Every structure is written in C-alpha cells, then in structure tokens.
Length: 71
Image 1: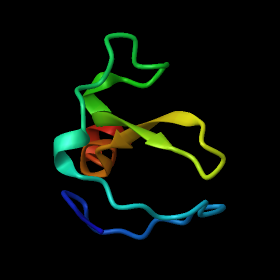
Image 2: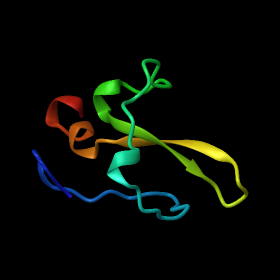
Image 3: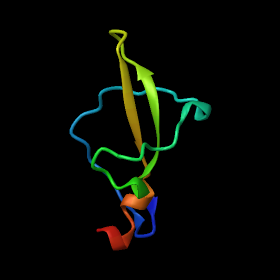
Image 4: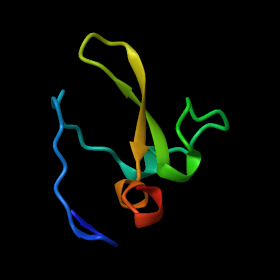
C-alpha cells in the first residue's frame, strides 16, 4: 500500500471473505463510532450475512491510519 511513509505491507490474521460494495450504499459514520476515532472511518454499510442476519460493516481509511503522526 502507498502511504505518506512510502510503500508498506500489512499482515492480517484472517480474511473472512470479500464483498463488492456499491458506493451509493455507504453511509456516514455514526456519531458514536464504536470506540474508533471517526477521522479514520470512511463510512459504514449494512450487509446481509450468509445466514440472513444484518451486520454493520465499518470501512476504515487505511491511509489516514498510517500517517506518520498517527504511528
């Protein structure tokens, strides 16, 4: 990923899956951003899981998270 610090790599423990999100479905982050600084959230989207449950997915702005002043 390209950031202000240059190219960086990110390691994750597990990938649950991948989905396509229509940009029109992205909503602004809620006022109470579940313990995450709203500056780092691009938005939220409601998705339906395989078992039919609704789930709120938080879209993080990785480039903002990895700014030098945030590390």
